[in-house]
Length: 355
Image (cartoon, rainbow, N blue to C red; front, side):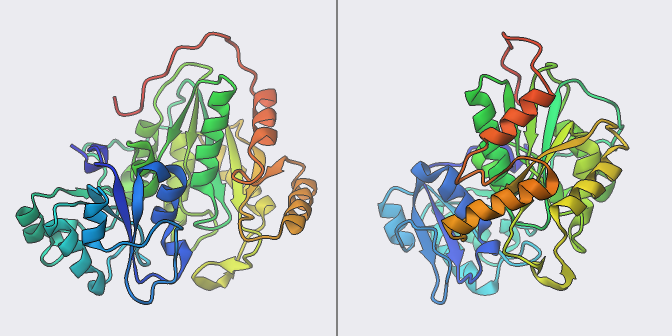
């Protein structure tokens, strides 16, 4: 079985190590945002400058608070675990906590972790493990409707936007499913496809498997990965774009950035540039692809400036522009349902992707 589909025992504690940048702690931040009721606290090493806002604990205090799992909530470029974090992971495993991670290295390959898990009777859950037997992409048109979140960069709101849109569509009575494509989304949803761990030849096929044929009025809201202008991670974005065949897409953007995060020689593209490129590429498998909105991450922006930014990007693109967490997604949902009217009032509950 794919470890991503094994049930994560709750409650859990998130481990941030000594991380100094929120962009690498998006797993912990996302879990606290979307599964906060299941989180008893955070474990941080000296020097950590990231705070998810939950209580600080050590391994023994987390265990005493009822934690059953430790989730590695931060990592470095390339999905690796720093050597000085391994001792805490071993201590948690030996104390009986399951260890859950979405790394590009297997937990059992880290020194001492497998032995500690055996002593503590703990499970090691590697989330970034794709299923076996994935096909090469076919390009075959599938039934149902699909919306994909794209970004001007990594870690700019693609997952949060997809989760918020799925939630708000369902509130309107629309048959919708969130399709997770990264480790954090999989941990939140309990299922999904770790696209950035799939061999390149099978990326489009994996995206097709993730979002199968569906009822004509059903929407799969697909979490985006990487970015089309990113020199390191564009390959997963293109595979997801071609394989998911989106009818509609949203461009997610952090208006405070001017360059690709961590690649300072690459200027950040505008949302309009991403729209143009996404349509040019996406027409290969869906000639009717279109953008239906812009989602800004304004979490660190003054409220007065937020209103100005939302209005400015709406004028620039001619599309509804929202912050999905602060302002909600109603403007985009309205646009989506206007452009893709529902043909049925009574819709069956669509099966989950991995049932």
